[in-house]
Amino acid sequence: MQRAKWISPIVGLLVLVFGPPARAAGLLGEYGYLTAFHCQSDGEARARIRTMAREFGIREFQLYDWFADYSTPTRGARWTDPFFRRREICRATLTTYIDEIHRQGGRAWAYVQAVGAEETKWADAARQIFPLISNGQWYWHAGRFPCYFLNDAWARHMVATWAPTVKQLGFDGIHWDTLGALAPNYAAEAAGVHAFLGTTQAELRRFSLRQTMNFVNLSWWNTQVVLANLEFPYAEVWSQGAEQAYFQAMFHPLLLKRRGAIAFYPSAALPPGWTASQAIISRHREAARHGLAYIAVADGDRRVVNEYWPITEPLSPEERRELAVKAPAERQTSPYKGKIAPFIRR
Image (cartoon, rainbow, N blue to C red; front, top):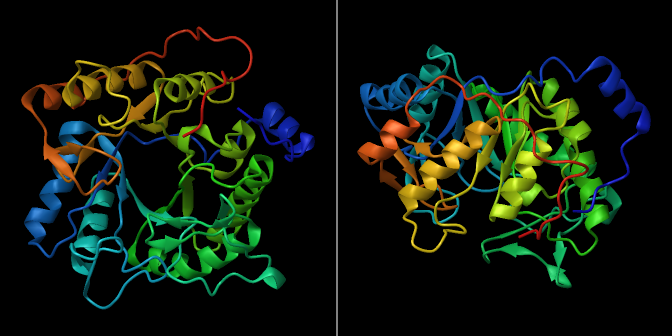
């Protein structure tokens, strides 16, 4: 894996000597997510959160695709989901969820697609805002929305667009989602991502908001950048090689006492003959042994299926027993030596 070399040696030395910022202490508990935002009774909405908190120990809740579109946080009292524009999203449900999350001692994270917008009009070389170029042309995710190159200028645009509403709704912070390494120049993309995170952290602080970001297959990973700018590590992995690289990264001396989150979907890299349930159970156990929270539980007592999180299935009795609250696993001794093992990025 390529590593960006832009970060100041002085910053790295300060982190090594004095430790990371106190606010980057890791997860409060397990990690789950919400996608059922339809208009519902107060009791139904609160019951979902209570089930996740009390039965599964979840304290970090990501609200996925909660907004009106990729440039518009909300639209009145209700709207449809931003991608397929079919699911109902009710503002009252969002605020009830967030209130109950806080009652349960948890934090609510507003999912925002970091590279996305509805329009192409924001590209402006004079303002240092650029299209995300992949294979020689402007990259559109699944043909749905144009994507922008992450850097400090785009960071300021995104915080200005999202932070006021995120704060007003009561979220604790923003989870910046990404699509992985796409730009032809990986080193420039990594430097841009790191600059984006430094700027968003500073800008979000004005709103008393925190942040996390998805390092897809550990693209752009840098321990000092993670510790300096993010509340806890978070990565979505698509192969066993990427999973092992994440485990190895978490054995960095500055991360040993911190927990992070891992998304490794049961639909991805499924071993021959395995069921999705077997993959969830195995990956949950491996994550716990390496100081990570495995993301599986959704919308009360349902579970993840693939990368489109609104598609969920009821938890089976075996899955429910496996994912129920347990004493934290003791992190095993690192079998790794040297740098993070190389792997093929998605």
